[in-house]
Length: 460
Image (cartoon, rainbow, N blue to C red; front, side):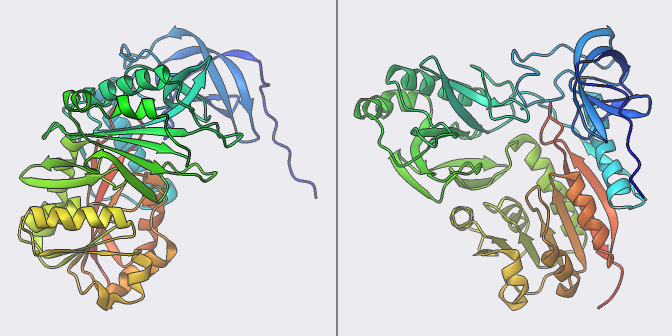
């Protein structure tokens, strides 16, 4: 018996008028035409848009907005000159209250549709007071055109760099340093990496800035070639670096054909190979490649939420995927005994140094994957609460299967991806959800940060 063919009611190049019904989890407007789903980037609920079909598949299509026939009441003026071409921020045209409602709904939809979880507790929203100029790190992509460097972020779905002199989401010193480097690169005709032929020197530019200390760290991601001597001489002039607040210049080597930003080796070119940042009463050492939340203003709110939950039933804590130890140190400052686990050697080194700086002997860090230590739980010790803060791909099946066997009474899951959060929570059937908070770490974007408190419902 042949499969039923799906009849697609539109073709590429067709023009039609569409009414935007809602926002998809991607932040794109979602429309329907004769039962067929169409996504319209920049479309907002309430818009009626003249569109051109640019892509069709059996399940959905993509349309380009040509003209607004009727404008959503939630639409606002956009400050960025390269929106929506730049793929960094998809929601700048949506008023901020509606951005928060969208993010809470994204979590609700993921839990119900992907996890098949009936959400029986309120989802609390923690909005940002600062909705622009909040990011403490800029990881910029590079290309060149007509002999001039292009520095910015990738156009969505491509590796085409959208060049811009400013980014409205990063802290202003990051923009200033990036533009100073651009001038030097252009003056000395620095070779820029071309990913198709795997030739060229500079692959990326990373600038970290600590708003509380005023310190910045400048990093170049390169292949194994050499910088022009005159470029190095001018780059490392002390006066320029000090005037810009730069405390260190480093170089990370990545000679692989990969989409990963960093390679394994980093060397210092000038000053320090780290900067010092502060959150609350804590001091943190941050190297170029170690993980740290990019929004320090919202990070304090997230950490306070985790601390409040842990203190409800205090006891030893294991902080998995701990990065540079942010949550671990925050809890240790409150008198809680914490073991942090992370597979990044650079992050663990930073975390150990930060624990020393803050005189927190009740906080220890061990290097390795969580999967590795789950095979030998004695290495991390017993815990009352397990905190997991995995990357976007979520926890591995091995981790999810092992969590109930650890005997922890409470689990706090911090996630930057509602889809993998829902997938993982659905499998943690020994635990029930007690609280959910959506902390907006990424205003103007469709990215969502969620913290979930769970308690064991079944005994071992």
